[in-house]
Amino acid sequence: MEALRPKGAPDAGLSKSALYRAARAGEYDRIARGIYRPADAPAADWDWIEAATRRTDATICLTSALAIHDLTDTIPDALDVAIPRGARVPATQAAISWHLFAKATFDLGRTQIPIPGSELQIGLYSPERCIADTFRLRGDLGYDLGREALRQWLRRGGKPARLIAIAARLPRAEGPVLQALELLT
Image (tube, rainbow, N blue to C red; front, side, top):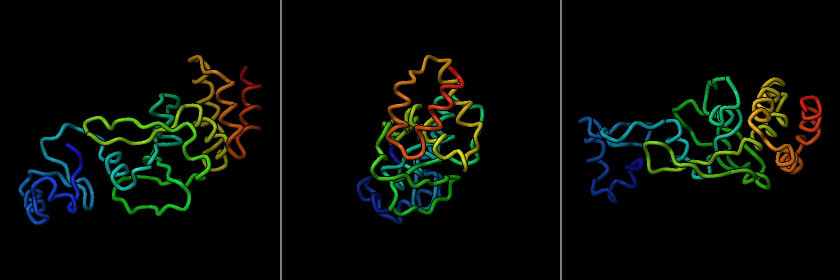
């Protein structure tokens, strides 16, 4: 079952107060402020559910996306989630690091994936987009993260032409990506 919010409780046949009583009785788990799931629902990542519930355009990015694609050994402290620049950053209880990406390039390399154990979906950037972003934001993320991910991606048969095509569309990414590719290939 999908995450339930108090304003959607009538659609599930409950009043708001009945939802709160059911949560106190243990029939629903409180994921975050205003987000509930049935207690017998399959296991799911509550951070992903909260991000997807708060913002329908939430997209897993940077270190978190690289970890999902198995391109880094780094374990992120918080879930990295991108939203379009100019959007309101929601208040969350989960360990979510919100990043504002330019509206013009926000959908570049973005796909929707199902959240395991839930009916919700969340966005995820492609490996090429993640690598380009790590080079673009290397001052904040560190220089080694992008190089490590690029090495892993190339070992798996990644196509440099696809990476360069994406990096060319992102500001401050093409030069560093080309330079790293020259060194590694």
